[in-house]
Amino acid sequence: MMTPDPIVLPTGGVSLPSSPTKAKIRNVAGSYLLCSLKGPPPVKFKMQSPEHLLPSFTPLLDPDKTRVLSFSGCPPLDHRLTEGQDSMGSFSIRLEKENFTFAAAHFLLFHDGACERLHGHNYRVWIELSGALEENDFVLDFLAVKPVMKAICDRLDHRVLLPKDNPYLKIDEVDGSIEARYRDFRYCFPAQDVVFLPIHNTSAELLARYICTEFKKEVTQRFRTAHLNGIRVGVEESFGQAATYEERY
Image (cartoon, rainbow, N blue to C red; front, side, top):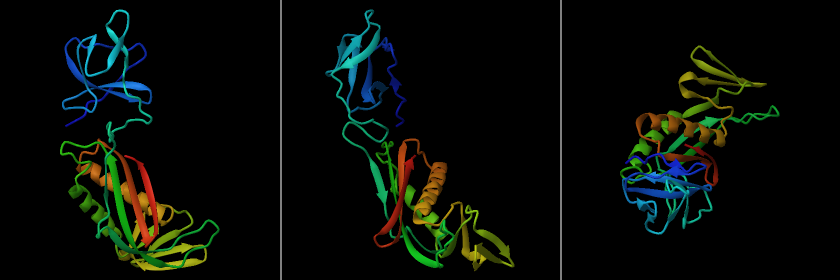
């Protein structure tokens, strides 16, 4: 069920409907919102006439009684009420499955010219999504999330991760091999074992952002995601050592 866009009460108020209507009042960052509804809202009123408002909210009208200026009796909110929240709380899902893993080799590049030795991790990944409930009372179906996350991890599994957006890392392909050079360091890998990532370094932080970007791109193409408002991805290099990235959806 699609939630209609709310109408923000502008300066001077909003015109009253000419016929009875149901709506929801929300106090969002100091502005009252009127949302028409197809289902039961957490806070609702039925306007039968400008003076009759149920259950307990009274409209403050202009002198001509044709426009609502504000409402008395609206409960104050201390935070902005956004999609994914109702009067009782907010919704999110978190998935941390046993197959959201990949084993990969990498080396970090440092601003002082130093470079890590080539080494590897058994990475574990988790994802959290927040937003309003869609028509099946999900934030997003677990069955929609799991194959997308697994496919992203599979593309990184048993690969050497190279950051292609680092201007100091010189990368060439020679006779089926990838040669990577950083100052006095030189690495050579079979081309089929390398994955190039659009990031500046292969830190856990930037890997989390990369996975987040890939997930959003693939899920948005396949599923309705307009009701989502937040995404958070975690990448664990080893037990007790992890990084997270989050952004608005």
